[in-house]
Image 1: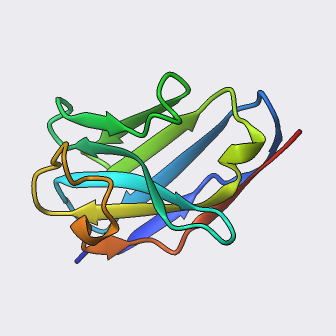
Image 2: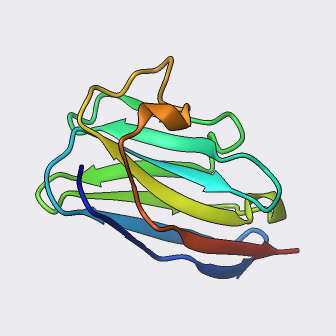
Length: 124
């Protein structure tokens, strides 16, 4: 397991942008983002392998969110544009040493390490 520390959450109006960052304590192949709104299950938002060739997104964020990696800094980013009130949630960074899998990345049980979360609030 690695230690994950998120930053960059906050409050923004609909249509605005935020950039989340997650720094890992060491190299780890697959990193991603999940979110959980009050009363709802945690859901996968995006994932990216260290090689840069495998990136995955939830349908609800495609075209608005972009995941990227800085492997020298062991950091993953989530650029969130055109934010909507329904994007309001606690956002969690996740990491796992195995390859990012297109068929399983969005399952909570696919990930071995989790950050403590950062709140994103989008007002209408």
